Amino acid sequence: MKDRSRRERILELLKEEGEKTPKELAATFGVSLMTIYRDIKELEREGLIERKHGTVKLKENDAPPKECFICHKDVDGRQNFIFFLRSGKKLQTCCPHCGLMAFDRLEEEPEAVLTKDFITSNPVNALDGWYVVGAKVAPCCSPSAFAFADRETARMFAKGFGGKVLSLSEAVKEIKRLMSAGVRVELKL
Image (cartoon, rainbow, N blue to C red; front, side, top):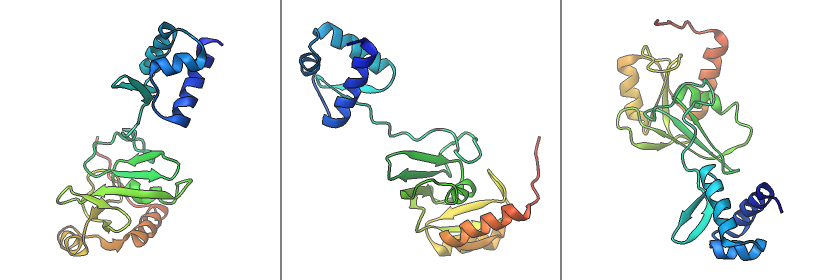
C-alpha cells in the first residue's frame, strides 16, 4: 500500500472509530511503527490529525474561517455571525448585515447561529435576537444592521441612531428589500 493511500485509510479509520494508538495503526496496516510515525507526522503537518496522550485522532476544527463568506472581508469577531450547519461545517460573516443576507444564501438549514450583542458583546442566539436595520451609522457593511439580545436595547439604539427595530425574519426581509432597492453607499478612500 502506497504512503498516500495508507494515510487516506488512516483518516477514514479515525473518522469511523475515533482515537487510535500508533501501535494499533501499525498492526491494522501491517507496517512498522516507524512507518506509522512518518504517516502521523505528515498528517499532523497537513493539519488533519493531532496527537494527545499517546493516541492520534482527527483534528477538530473549531475555528470558523476568518473571511466573511458573503462579502469576503476579514472577520474581526466583534459583530460576526457564526453559522453551525447540520453537516458540521461552520460559516462566518463579518457583521449582522452579511449575517442577515446569509439566511437567503445558505445551502442547508443551520443547526445554530451565534452573534454578539452590539452593546455588551455577549453571545446572542441570532435566531432569537433583535435587529436595528438602516441606522445612520455603518461600522462595516451598508445598509447597516446591528444585533441586540433584547428589544428594549434595540429600541434605545434606534432612538439615537435611527433605523428599524425588527425580529430576525423581519430583518432578513428588510435587508433584502434595501439591497434590491439600491441603497446609497458612501465610499471612504
